[in-house]
Image (spheres, helix red, strand yellow):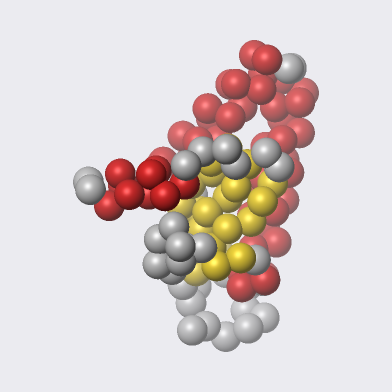
Length: 108
């Protein structure tokens, strides 16, 4: 486990960045670019809070060991914590079958 109070660097691997692009495109199309921008700002703000206090939010070992999650309605941001980083694993709509998404990932 890592030291409490130590700020970590937030890392966005390609799959998580792709999730953000898809979210933005969807909301820009069905609502407006302004609403898409606002949602991505809310996700960014939540992930910046994770850097300082990553263990404040829910452990999701039921989905995959070591995974944690924070809700940014209507999305769930899944992440892993190391001593120096918070790795954003995926940003998924809250109605998705999370277990199925991560089970498919383990089969890779």
